[in-house]
Amino acid sequence: IFREGYDSVSWQNAMTTAAAVCAGAACFVNNTMSTAPSNNFHQLNLSGGWAFSPSTKLAGGLSYGRNTQNDSYAPTSIMQASGVAYNMMQAGGLPQSSLNGSVITRHADLKLTNQTTKDLVLSAGYKFNERDNRTASNTYLYMQIGNAAYTGVNLPYSNKKTQVEVAADYRLAKNQNIRLAYEREDIKRWCNSVADGFQCIASPSSDENKLGLTYKLKASDNVRLNAGYAYANRSGDFDPAHVANTGNRANRGSLLAGGGAADWVTNGGNRLGYVAYPYASRKQDILKAGVNWQASDKLDLGLNGRHSDDRYNATLGVQDGKTTSINLDANYAYNEQSSVSAYATWQNSERKLSASSDLVLAGTPQYAAPAINVWTNQLKGDSNTFGLNTKHTGLMGGKFELLGDLSYSLDKSRYSTQVPYLATCGTAAVLTCGDTPDIKSRLVTFKLTGTYHVDKKSKVVLAYRYQKLTSEDYYYNGYQYGYTPNRVMPTNEQAPNYSVNMIAASYVYSFK
Image (cartoon, rainbow, N blue to C red; front, side, top):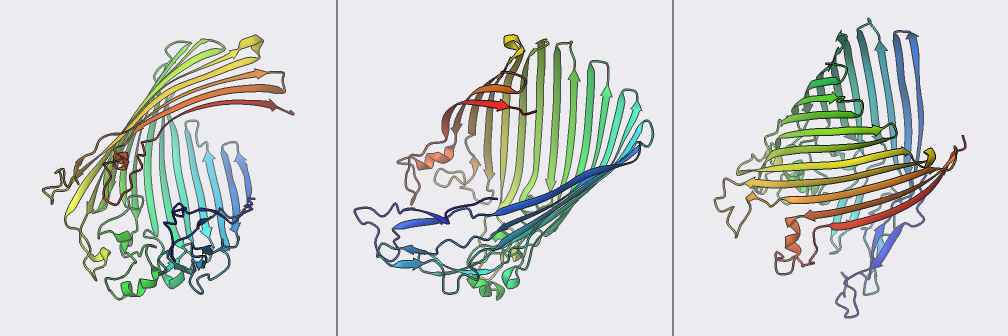
């Protein structure tokens, strides 16, 4: 239950100064913004299980939630420098006094397992999640700052996901196991009764089939190996004639008549063939492998790797992507109460996309215009992390324990763009293609926590944390004096860099 005591926050217009540089009908003394509305959320949960026999068991749960919000809209009139109140809504622009929002969430999950034989375990699972947005869709008539009429419609977005999985775990030999699993996922997206009868989403549904195989081997008492492969195939429905909820809806008649003056845009303003990658059909291959070595009673080593290859079925948009990661960790317990661990991770990712920079001719909807003058772009990223942590227990007569953690991470990303139809794209005067400088961020984190057990029921915890971020981003070069583009005010803003020190103390008491 959340309650907000105010409906808006106001602050003085930065342009309203003693020099009266802001004056007239388009000048406002104060700016006003609405705050988060009061709202209620209630949820009922039920979980349980049933053992049909010693070898067959069923477990699952149900959930039902209701989220409502019915605060009155914030004031729509604001004061101008001329002393006249300005109404931000047209006459009749508020179809109702509040949103009267309502969202219902439902969840269900079931899992059936059966110990078919001594070496074989079969399982089947089902999951259901639904977000049903029952908020009414209405047309709102705004007035822009320039005193021009503007029309918009709210879209109550809903979605539903169902997942089904069947799997078999089989023991090949005493030290070998294999798991075969199949998963099916279906997603539906919609809006309930959109005003004006228009579609609210570009991809109403998608389904994905995934098949995975995992193999585990205990090579010896000290060495364990695992390897796995998964293949996924996603098919997505996409409507290129979808009208995005962008621009002035008052001009919808121009769009429907095929005119070129409409503010609405089809397919998000993109060319025929463009599909946003979260909704595009995709094929994916995933490889995993790892080894764990208990080198001694005190030393444990682990190495794991993962690689994924994504291929999207879209003429324009993201074409493919690859991600590779390697994780190495070691743990050394130099006595029964103390240990030290070290870890290192490396990750590399890249994605390629194609796009078209052509303008759409008047009277030609974007979804009907083929893509020509195609340009391509690649985004690559590297992430490296190194860390060291330690744990000491049994200090001060067994009452004090100490935890420490030190980590360093370096992340880099860079773009490369090719514009083959523009021979001058790489010249200093144009510079619309080529490679950008690396965008970098370095983060150092140190944490130290001490816990003193006063007695069996109470303890005192003291903690210290230090964090430092250093970043480099060429984007901020354009904010510097003498280097700003036309019509951009220089702020001399720098890439984010900060240091944080934190000290915390707490007392914990258990009533058990």
